[in-house]
Image (tube, rainbow, N blue to C red; front, side, top):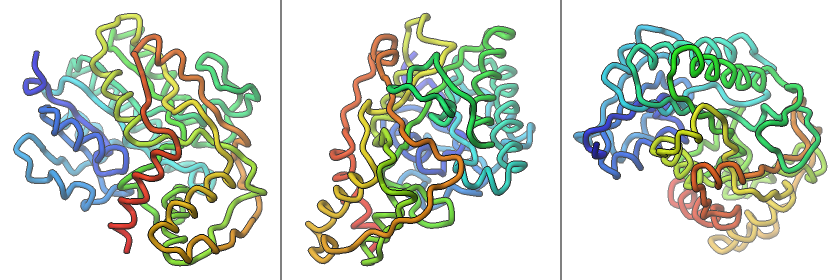
Amino acid sequence: MSEAENTILITGGAGFIGSNLCEYFLQKGYKVICLDNFSTGHRHNLNNFINHPNFKLIEGDIRNISDCNNAADGVDFVLHQAALGSVPRSINDPITTNEVNVSGFLNMLVAARDAKVKRFIYAASSSTYGDSQGLPKVEDIIGKPLSPYAITKYVNELYAEIFSNAYGIETIGLRYFNVFGRKQDPNGAYAAVIPKFISQLIKHESPIINGDGNYSRDFTYIDNVIQMNELAMTSQNKEAVNTVYNTAFGDRNTLNDLVGYLKRYLSEFDSKIADISVIYGENRAGDIPHSLASIEKAKANLGYDPKYSLQDGLKEAISWYWENLK
């Protein structure tokens, strides 16, 4: 079956990752349905393709099973991105995080099962590794969760495995590691660190680092994540399904490293940024000190070959933010 005959449902399609997936798969010739309630997604993320003949927007909520059934009807693949992210948000409001990330996830699994979709790919999270000390993180060794958010994402994996075993639906979970790139929202109390820091530096404000800046992360550019979603959706390797994969670059940088790169690349647009100082604050509750993914399983089973390092991705992202934030 050609791309043009396949329909993809992307939940959370107005969000950062979801809108990038919508745009990519429309360009590849797929029909794309976006389900979003715009609680964290933005209509302006859809501007480039809202009038595309193969695009359909359904305004609905994954907590409503009828919305899920409506969106999944006639769909070949589901890329489930809809969720309430952020460890601090989950600590402040664990009930809503659970309703969206667990009940909403279960609704989408049921809708996908009933619609007989070919494969259900979902956004899992590196937070599932919890207090596991080992580096790099390997998929089959996890620790205890450190936040309500981490619990919800681990429960997603458990539900997906049960649905694969009980109902025969093919599932693949992608454990995202600190994804960044174009369209990621720099505003709000729970903004991710990279767009937030970029926005602050452009405005000549000092970024605030939680802790001493030596916590490290496997920062992962959006185009690597798009590649993983496509490979997970299209792989013909039957051994590759009904499991989870780290979705990362496979390298780690400290927050101090990150700010250094941001200042260097942004100062090419505005030389004053090079002299902006950094403020150090308290560590955040629920934060994992260090994160680094093993991507060997994804390479072996899916042929994953990430193209963008942190530095490569930051150069691309900064160009986009410079045009869109000024």
